[in-house]
Image 1 (cartoon, rainbow, N blue to C red):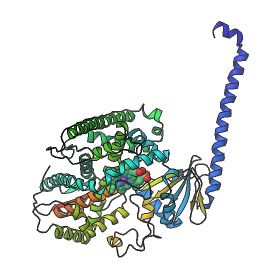
Image 2 (image 1 turned 90 degrees about the vertical axis):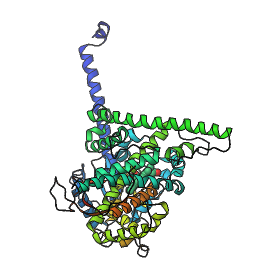
Image 3 (image 1 turned 180 degrees about the horizontal axis):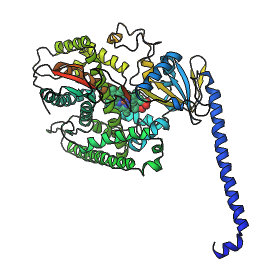
Image 4 (image 1 turned 120 degrees about the horizontal axis):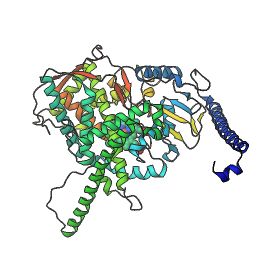
Length: 536
Ligand code: HEM
């Protein structure tokens, strides 16, 4: 010790100080533990109105019952069969979770006003470094403002323009598939190809950017795919949830690098577009009529022009967060939906034939194979098959919420404020109390003649209520274009996973951020005729 201090603090004094620090720290730990346990007891008491499946430990609760993959989904099936509408789980003394899987329970939770709904950090926090305070992750007034500003980008008049991009991206995919079939590689993994295709489409619609990512490596598209994979990996590693540690890991460094590629790209697009808009304004004031051909508006154009009630638009940083969110929320979900629709049709050839006939009737007498906006409403049976696949293999399996006030549910049950509610889309879609033969693929359930009895919250692949999916019409339009063109050009049968050596059509589902399949989803493709599809 420095001389002055050593005179003041003798060894005995030093020991006393250290002892006091130790007692202080022990006091803090004891206080936190008691608070945590008291909170645990309080939640356990408040949630006792819900059925509680057997927990392995009074402290750790259902932690050990959390299962991944196919086993996890079977476990959910059992919970749904046993408890029919809801049950309560806890994961250690930290997280108390109400799981609901019945329309009557989904409804009050999903329809609750957005100002009392909070996206919880446990499930969504991991996305924050990538998506910032964007629509998907924001709450309250901030969310309201963003939703108001972004909604025009998904208006029918705008979506119409995107159908041409869906056609062109699908043509590129099909040209690739046709080449593979000709080379004798008709047994194909779907997710890799289709995910690149939906990314290609979204880049065209969001930024008017022809990345060519289906044919060659694109820096931006690869960075998006990498961010996605890193998020999935981070979710499975508990220690990596701790930001301080994560940014020091190899994966954290890779994440930062990929994010900087993505952000640089968006920043440049936005800046160029702002400059173009102000240049166009100047030209417009100089001469009323312009002879320049009009470019189709993309997401960035629309978002840049929108203003809130106070005349404020989104800043470059806000647009960047929203663009990242569209990429994240839009490409993998739609790819999952497309793959599972094709899988279900491959497993049910009579429905596949019926859809194909519908598409062929629609295209009869045309000299181009282009699905147009007005065609989308002329594919009723194909749409039923798409909906049934979205029910059986919903890309998003659950959404979670917290509420800033107690929430009343049927049967005099109340979710206390602050508890996490997990609305199981998967559980609701496969609930035998809601659907007859829920495990079977029966598209006619969605025949308008049969949907009258459906509860409004029985079919919720896009969630529902104020925080439903803003991109659902976009996704449904893309799904119909891709499925219709695929059936026109290829016959699908269940494929064989060469690595797992499973029987044709046998898949083990894999819930990651969206529903995928272990080892991929394999289909056998046969080219139907040589069509004159354009390859963009
Ligand atoms: C089949 C495809 C899709 C499915 C199944 C799907 C599903 C969902 C679901 C379940 C939610 C609610 C998430 C939550 O509450 O945590 C959601 C929200 C959202 N989706 Fe989609 N989605 C799809 C396609 C798209 C597309 C194509 C876009 C954009 C281009 C998009 C953008 C968004 C956004 C921005 C939100 C947040 C909305 C808000 O909180 O206000 N989605 N989606």
